[in-house]
Image (cartoon, rainbow over all chains, first blue to last red):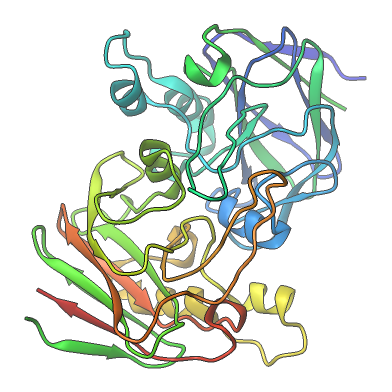
Length: 195
Length: 195
């Protein structure tokens, strides 16, 4: 088993993941979201796509066995293990602007968006190249009748995890999410491991 | 009232829309989808964002009164009239690859994706810059309990329309959609008008 890396509270990390390797994202204390982005290492204009993935999967509830596709319709990651089964692939990472919108009375924070932009800059990824992220452990139920969505506390408990297998050479951005509502009102670190 | 333009069956159009002007997308025969993309005319790296929009609207059912946001969290379009109330903002435009996936026995078609890429090329928009589109009249119910989504025939009748008011100077891409399931199995033109 690979070494466990810690992403501190309200921060992010960028790293490479070779085709065939496995990335495990662990919620070490429970009830903590981690936004995941993936870019092709050969050409970072190829990026994870919620729209392609939801179209092919025919569900918004992605879990073990589902593929995450790029904007070029190529498989980037396969979910090979998932102890939670509740993740979000509808919403963009929290940012200064989302803090201003949802939490006007709290000190603003650059959020996952700013953390991802900094973490991915060494590979030439800019803010405008950040799409909808795969938000591990984020609990966003949709009411089928009205269409209303809610951001509820994650259902993940301490030690829960989701494991992805890379289908191409990737650059990964990963965070410990910074938004109060997404994380049940408190901020915890995220752990990850590459095997 | 502005002149009515026709987008022929299974094709697309690109045009500019100034801040304050209104774009009306009309389904002239009923049961026909039209994919809409919007880019800032000042910088086409600023583009319509499903993830920002759904986050701020707190619903996947967008209709009159809702704003469509850019990836920079700025309002691009406001929906000011809507005679249908059923549109999709989850899925990417149909493409060669989606035809291969969903209709392996039909002749392949470049779909809305190819049509949008060609229509938007004069403004420097490339295929990789095409995100989830706002799919006018596309009927994609989500089952809240299971997360499953379905692509059903549009509920729009002949003459139904949706009107958007531009909040910034825009480049617009618009199609008459090419995918069988999205359009109840037949392909019709789309009309639009700028006022």
